[in-house]
Amino acid sequence: MFYREAGHFRDNYQADMALFPIREDRIGVSLLLFAAFVAVPLLHLARIGPFSGDYLFNAILIPVLILSVAAIGLNVLVGYCGQISLGAGAFMGIGAYAAYNIAVRVPGMPLIGTFLLAGGVAAVAGVLFGIPSLRIKGLYLAVATLAAQFFFDWCFLRLGWVTNYTPSGSVSAPALVVFGWEADKPVERYLLVLTIAAAVAWGIANLVRGNIGRQWMATRDMDIAAEIIGIRPVEAKLTAFAVSSFILGLAGALWAFANLRSWEPYAFSIDRSFQLLFIVIIGGLGSIVGCFLGAAFIWLLPLVVEAVPRWLSIPISADAAANLTLAAFGVLILLTLIYEPHGLARVWSITKHKLRRWPFPY
Image (cartoon, rainbow, N blue to C red; front, side):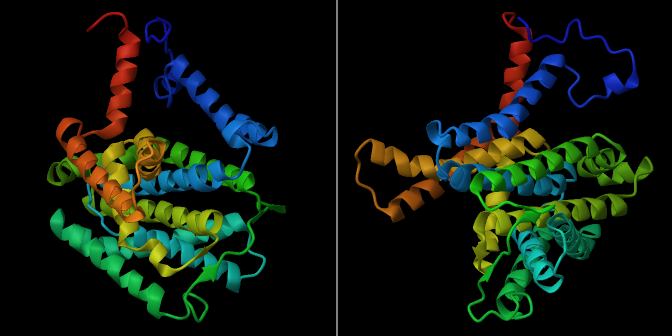
């Protein structure tokens, strides 16, 4: 009965355009951020429950947050602008290798500056490969972005300058030093990734509600009608590619520096692109919350598939568990497209809708 829109009066434009206009939503988000930034590190320091060790941070929290950031970047392009992309993994790889080369070749560069420059390099590459989107769309655009994936995979493998001429092709990230603070422990890397993820989510949530976001969505719905009312689809599509690639490059730098620490080109193969696309589809197109829900669901599903047979004392090989995971992915995508095309974000939206009107059925 306490979660209601009635009684929330807005008497100025700032309150009317607030990101969370309902007071209960603001309280809930504040509590969630407090738990993520304060409660989780304190529980780790106190060695309480699953937060006592490093496994939860290394295996779950850090990867889920970075994949959420990458999904937000892909969702800008696919969900908000309606441009199909199958090369998200390549742009993550561009960000990772750009950050590595900047850190190696420009000593003394601040870590945040390294990440921002890496995102800028990925944004330039995204604009260059987004130029074909001005003339093609749909399946043809998907093939063009797939070509970008294969091209950059070849670059990561064959161009020695990219990997600083390492014989094996595998590279290692330097230490994570932010304003003199070295984030070497898992909980410290978690806080770094969490801060960047929160900043990206907040920035994109505000961006899509403004003029640029409205241009993206108008182009997504019908580009001809958008052009008639004064929107330039050329600029809308290219800005979507630039912003999307920048975030993907930033996520790739985080994935390499804060999660993998050492990686090879196969870490950003086409499998990563499909994983991000599945996150966006299952989480919900055009939803920031859906990116976090989809990333958590996709990352935790293989762990659950492997754990359930073990809990039930059913012998199963690693190959069979991997095949079960792929089968579960396929079934879930089909069920999502059939029964809830808007993904987990829509389920969350319906839940909030029912809570605001409970106990009334309408």
